[in-house]
Image (cartoon, rainbow, N blue to C red; front, side):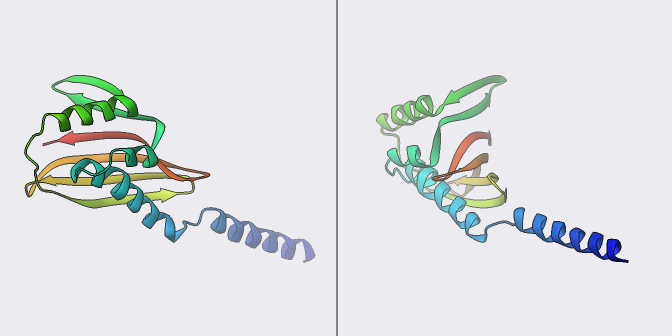
Length: 147
């Protein structure tokens, strides 16, 4: 009888322990949304400070682009150069809005699906992946569909 009680007790400890190990920190969802808003959406779509991108996007960030049948891989530095070149052309400012469709996270990994509207019409669906480093969440990859 003692052995069966011990087995049940150990099973209970393992179950409870695993639950706590895999528990999501409720603050992480808010932190992820804040990082993406302040270090991606506002700098890019509201003509904010591009240096904020460096705060939210890891230095090894990679963007994957499929454009007109061609596949490109872009670094954070190259992406920021492209943004600056576009801004230098002084194109008319458009109105953008966005919705977080999915923020799924577990432990140190997160995936975000983000819909971005231009002048009220769907323009992009972004898929961002993030890691939680010692100093916080950083976007490590981006791929998107353009409409």
